[in-house]
Length: 73
Image (cartoon, rainbow, N blue to C red; front, side, top):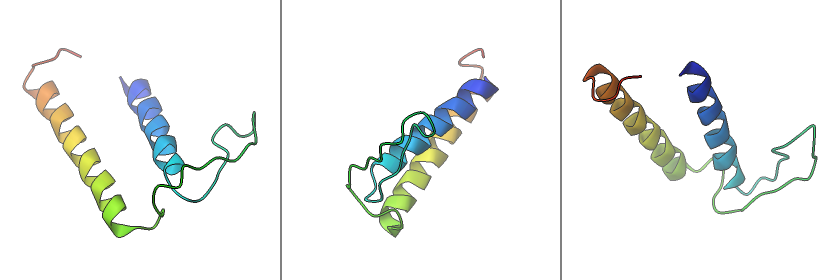
């Protein structure tokens, strides 16, 4: 469960970075092409707060499911 959480967090962080204006190489050092979707600025307060709140809600839902024994992990 710990590996999946870490791997999922890393993948979601890279996806979040892809949405910004600043290009980067997500597959470096294997593939050095820089990409960016350019949907918003990486230092935008509204977007950062939105993603932070989504993360807090997802973590809270996870805790509720685990400690309420809804899902056996």
